[in-house]
Length: 118
Ligand SMILES: [Zn+2]
Image (cartoon, rainbow, N blue to C red; front, side, top):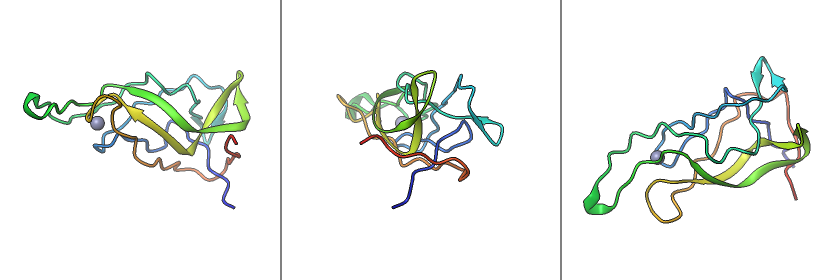
């Protein structure tokens, strides 16, 4: 079984349209000098440039709406779980009402891994 890698501010995390989630982190835990991302990702902004189209109700993403998977069960910072590369979540863009899923994340680091929450 492959243990997921921990995401950091250097990891690639994108909305369904391929634009980056501006995932900031206040975590004191760092890997290779980059702060690890925490599971409280909801609300982080997305720099989505999908053109809005009222005729098809196309709407660009502005933020992460929710995170549904990818929290570490064991590794926490300030009692918040770190985020793993198996993260799954939704943005607030098209298609409404739930928004599209985030694309699979790429950790960009392999030094720190942690088990996913059961
Ligand atoms: Zn988007």
